[in-house]
Amino acid sequence: MSEKHLVCQGADCICQFGTTPDKIKVIAQSKHYINDENGSEKLIATDKDLGQPFKAKSFGSCKKMNNNPCKPAITKWDGFYDKVLLDDKAHVLLEDSKATCSVAGSACVSITFHGQTAAMKAGNTANANEDVQSQLNPLFNIKKVEEELLNIYLIETPGF
Image (cartoon, rainbow, N blue to C red):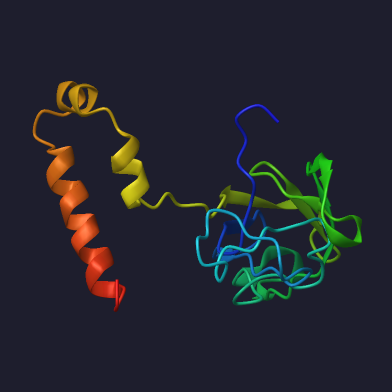
C-alpha cells in the first residue's frame, strides 16, 4: 500500500464525462472512522459504496447523456486495498481507486482528494522536540502553542 491514503467521507471525486466534482458520502457502513477523534465525520469509504454514494448525487451534466443531468450509478470500484476487510467483506478505497458507472462506463470516476485532514492536538506539541522545532521554524514557539492549546482545552472542558 506504499504511500497511498485511505479514502473517507468528504473525499473529492470527478467523473471524466461530468462537468462538476462531487464528494463521497459513505453509505455502506457506519462504524469505521479514520482521522476523526470524535468518530462523527470521517467514515472510511469502501468498495461496497455503490449506487449514488455522493453528497450531491451528480457530477453536473453528463457528456454520455447528451449533456443532460448526471445521475451516477456506481456498479463497482477498482483499485481498492484488498489486504483489509471491514464488515460485510468490504475493502477500503485508496486515493487511486476508480469507479465504474453504469451510464458512463468503466473507470470513469476518480478520486482527486482522499478527504483526510490532519488536526493538531495537544499531544502533538507535547511530543515535539523543542530544539528541533526551533531549528526547523525559528518563528514558531512550540511552548506558546502548547499553552494556548491547553487553555482552549480547559475552556472547552468544564469541571476540569
